[in-house]
Image (cartoon, rainbow, N blue to C red; front, side, top):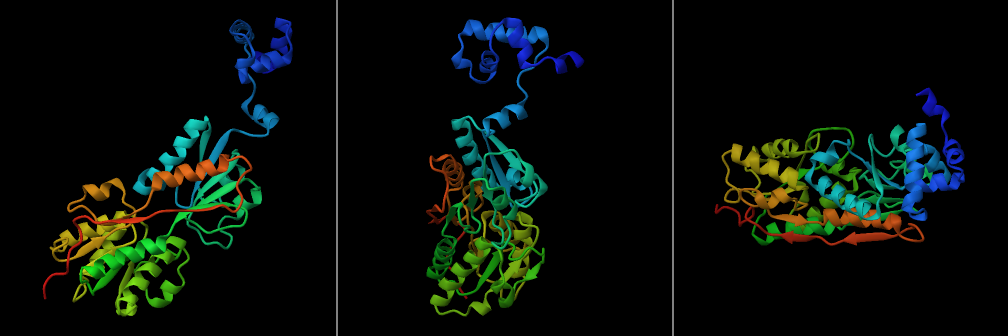
Length: 353
């Protein structure tokens, strides 16, 4: 080990009688050397105990690390467990593979200590966080970045969908089937971890953009049909996931009379709601219809298959990463990807009275 620390690039160059640039090219630009010369350099380096240029030193000399950062607003484990997040990660990874870039997963959220020091050239922020200060660390670093599903910020790219329209289409589908009693299985509205019924005052204070926009879409469709939004119960459970959806739906279905239609803000919540209906002895869609949001693979495989709003998760990831690699950099580009309603077997007209 002592010998290896003393051996430098200059040591190898001197032993071979070549320039330091030649030794450097053997590691960093092999296409600039003949195969014979590169083999000589690497063979001599091994004999002398030289392991190659230090990665950090090479990074500093180039001024870039050839890596994109991906920061989640949720815990990093969410990115490997939530089906929609997994599809998004696949899209980002596809671009990194194509461009021969490393992908650095930044744990702890956009304002974590890791986000402050991670060695990356640009950042994809898959973060639905409050606009006020929610991405302060990323902004302060001065790196190019794209926000996905979160707030619009000056100088940053943005990739998202029209959540409000998607939710409106979902609610209108149930209205067209004849439903008049609705319940909403909600994603978290605020960052306080509260569980229970979200009254109108709490709904008005919703901080997360996707939650706010989906609530607004449901409300617009229901009020446009002449129904009172105040009569729609919104149930919120934490932490987000299928279990939360089940517990929220159980509370809704325990009401008398219970809703005949559940609007779930995601497929994971909807799948939990369908399980809760079965536990309560209710048939989907005979007794209660359920609509999700996302169209993850499990939606089509559910029993019955889940009616849902489809959004292109993998394309979101591909587009976000590609924007960061575009010549000229990222500015205030905004990209809205399409959504569409996919009607399957979890929705039907309400039961006859």
